[in-house]
Length: 238
Image 1 (tube, rainbow, N blue to C red):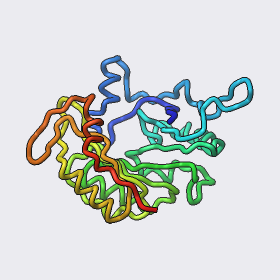
Image 2: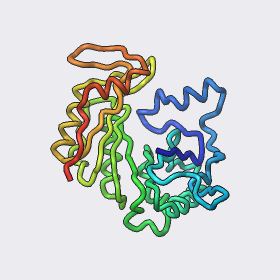
Image 3: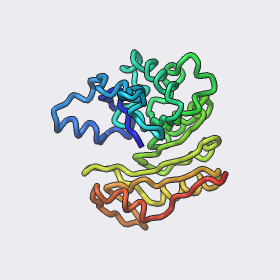
């Protein structure tokens, strides 16, 4: 999987952003995260080698891993990114956003029912934002949709929003002050996905992880491996 970060920097936007690892990392490096700037990789998808071939290989491309593709500060650059995405039909571009309500303001003029090579994940963390964002998301013209509930901060019901959703990813918060993740919340979303035939992935435990009523304090390096050990991921039946 390739990474493409056309710009860097972000701004806290929702309840899940409190302990954002991007902000923490930038603070240690004395970098102002709120400054949104283009990166040297802006034209990465269309850069070519001397033989005329694209440098970035075909396949899945994770866009804006450390920021948000729909952030307001990048409005002046985004249309150029859409052109590159459209040019690279051999790639599938995936991005997550906390700003799904901005989506229709950010799409290109020829978007219509969506680009087939674009996957867009809507990020939520609690019931309030699930209802707010998913009620918008469900009606948007997007070919491939997914939901990321990470960090999951409480028990939520998203079953009524799972029509036309291909996957749901769930995970906890990683920070010394992390808000706890209860395993029962994870299993409940899994059951919702099974009922609606939606793929489910438990991506990572939380630093403060509750299972069977007992609180466990986990190391950051173990969060993903412990989630995999649970062996509860499911795949939609085509």
